[in-house]
Image (spheres, rainbow, N blue to C red):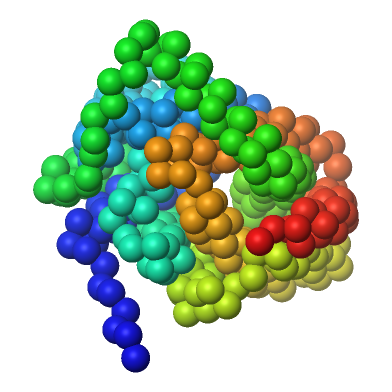
Length: 407
């Protein structure tokens, strides 16, 4: 019986760096939208600011993939973590001295841009640091640490926010980014310099065209799946991003600590899904992935019904349980898709193709966030949630043929 290879020291260092950096990121993702909503009380404004700040991630993910295939990935991680630390330090200095909405919008724009450029470097480093047979558990490990950081981040964020507002959260996240950047300097990721010549814009155009040609012509079924995931994000993911703060803070009127715990339930589901993906490994069949999307769509239906029929205390429990189960299924789906793409894509295209996949799959979310901001302002929360469940279920069923054609 062949022994399973252990992960390399450099891969473990990437994982540790991810835990620290993503923890700082998770605390901010919890606190900044909550602070905006608490200060303004407007779902429409929350939706518009979230939509606008999300655009840099969509735009910079492909750029991050192009850079990740041409620049040492370790250096990308280090520079971006230091940049995030400097940004948060400047935001802490400006808070209270400048108008809140434009200041917060600018910070979220830059943070999401950094995240959009950061993740392709991490994902593109996995095939370089893990053997082919380790791709599924390696991707599961990356998802698990992301979920672990997202589990602890909102809970601690809720405690800090309840204790002394936003500032302690800014200090903690800034320290996390600095510590992660320093530790990442010790990582060694194989890198071969590529001198293609020409301007950076010409190279970027060439790389982008090559990636899109691979996705939509050489692997057209992957392109069809991306479009279906894009539609799923429009109706499902966008609703959760805008809906959960509105449902919990406005409809159910929960305090900050319980709001943090509910966000922790999302992350706990992601952690459980990552563990399950690592245990199941190759037994997960990509051809049946549409069932996971369908489970996500139907999984939020009890959430909507509880808002209409149950008291607030019971509604909170249902929302937390549904959030947990939703993240279990969505993490299983994400791990499957990422491992499949990494195994099917030529090494020189991995970073660019993954970044294009991330950007294309997320491109509908800003539209959805703006749309749901208005809908939650104008319609009962239960009706919006139930409607999102029904439309997302139809999208999941429409993806069945595309997934069944994968090999």
